Length: 248
Image (cartoon, rainbow, N blue to C red):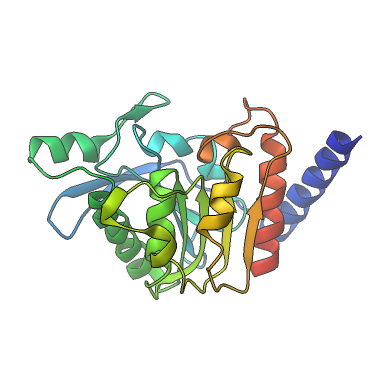
């Protein structure tokens, strides 16, 4: 019965957003832009029009911008231009190779999780310079943690969505402390097993709009929980739709 209610609500919200937006994004276009250390960052641009804000999509460890092949278009239909980036820490997923990571190795750049922050910051500047609208930042696993870190201090961010964030940086960074003053709206989710640690991680966050979604099933790590081949992906999407509706 709960599953049937979830599907009905999901369909209702999708219909509502389609009525309000009627958005059809252009096919993905590969773009590049430089990070602060001159490394060229590769990304896929899903462009709708200049009136919409940008959403930057960041992948998990071992992955590439291909993590968002299925989901970027759906985010566009919620009213965003989307940029799915290759961070220098990653490899390949869904048949898409991480070109930034390959170039970083070739150029002998450092490729730790924290080094990938440069690539996300470059994407923020690139998108913000397009139309001056604040950025909706999305991260997955280690990049979810970077997204929260950046959103705590970067004035170009309007909201953040973090899939399975955690203390991934060892002694180099205590994320819980770094995000305590985060004030923009945030949406956080994870697997059910990760949920307790995630709740502790964001417990000091000062944002007035702080939503943690915990799946009823075991869930999936990272943003791949939104892929339609995973159980309960609609539950995750419904929670996201409600959050976006709330912050509009």
